[in-house]
Length: 207
Ligand code: HEM
Image (cartoon, rainbow, N blue to C red):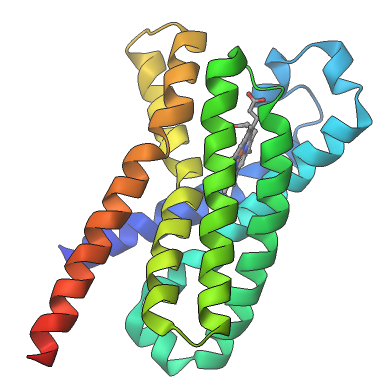
């Protein structure tokens, strides 16, 4: 069961991590771009932020998932450090671009506030993970990384919920406004639950 969960987790992280490549392959208004007005699509700053966000966000998903495997991490500490640095840099760059994009989100201020909240939480949790390891606080580093990656995983949950909402024939804009929140708030709750469970295991092992 544990292996099965791990395979699903890796499959979704890799699949959605590679998804932004489609924007390079399809030379047309693909996906979200088809819902944007011409004026915005001609805005150079928005375009830079959009491509910075989607490609570096993809790298964040691809670089993070394998580091939650304790055995892999402990055996390849140099790789862990290198991937960790890449992860932090791409999260900060993709997150700040995501925060800017949130002001132009489809679905207006409700969706914008949802994505904005996600962006700020992503920037804060990733920075905290970085500062705690700089201070050699390993347990705190692990906890903040769980929170940070749970937020990175919002890219996956959003792309699971959105097609489901369309199958359920919910109006796209209504669904998008709700999903801008639902794609990350429950992920954070799951992260807190995982952290509690991890703390309990450590206490049991120590006693
Ligand atoms: C976790 C923090 C994240 C925030 C705050 C965020 C925010 C946003 C925002 C505001 C948009 C534009 C939405 C609109 O204009 O309606 C967007 C689109 C997009 N984001 Fe993110 N995002 C995050 C993570 C990621 C990650 C990790 C990826 C990696 C694949 C990603 C890939 C994309 C893609 C591909 C789009 C274009 C829409 C689509 O084709 O589905 N995002 N994001």
